[in-house]
Image (cartoon, rainbow, N blue to C red; front, side, top):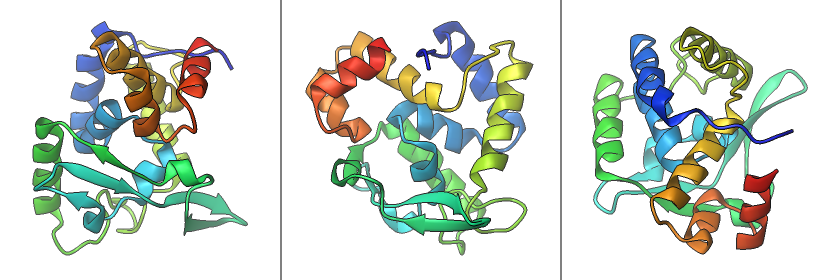
Length: 177
């Protein structure tokens, strides 16, 4: 599919809508890290190192045979440590204070377990529709992060490692297509 990004002028409105739904930290983290949906939903508190402002990405959630399954990511490069901006860590700490006993970074409000990836996608789609940015898939938020990172001066190799790609060349190709 052709790459799409959330227009920069719509990011503020996107985050405001996410806040209305009580999911601002989750969507803010996405825009400041470029995680894959399954990686984002599988995060646990033990993956966050507040002191060093890092997040360990070492699992992913997906639906298999009708059940949610948490497993290791598809490729070795997907297992990585991501450096987070200070404001992102602050939001995540505030989120932890909302449900300190739950091991998940973002527990589903319905089950207390991990979010269902399809339900999460539907929420993203609803927010996108409400802000008038039709046809921006959740995966496009990863492209948005990558594009904004490059525009702000992040080098391709660092971006490639952050995204969990196997090479900087692959990162460039994924942004072109």
